[in-house]
Length: 158
Image (cartoon, rainbow, N blue to C red; front, side, top):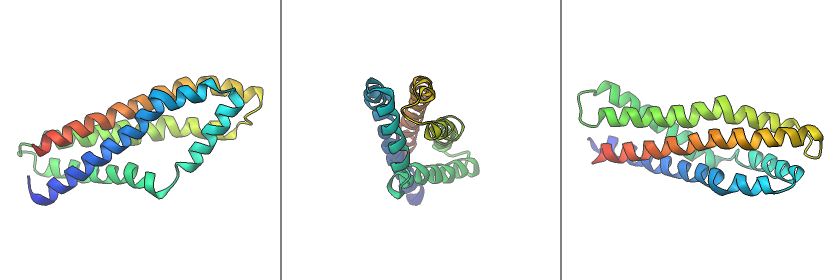
């Protein structure tokens, strides 16, 4: 593995680990804590989180790792005969499909629907029950995917 690809792989592994850790926190305890609150409080808190997450620090980890994964996936295709190519391609696919695609297709639409409800309304309470289950399930997929990417990227480096 060349020096630059090693550095890109290391950065992608680190980014994958950071993103996995963020999502792990939500699936393992944050959503459970929000679910124990009265619905209007849980909804308000999650609406606030969904606004606060739109920031350069999170985006750097989340989308920066996606960009690195694209580079590594392209490298893997171009240099398919190398020992690390399959691991890099698999790591890239896991990150891009399991984080980016799942976020776009499942988590963001749920967030957008939650943003439109009045927290203290009956509609909000009904939406919140569904949201807690569905969002957490898809977030768990988003936890596993970058964890697998991290392992694959590390294996590619060794």
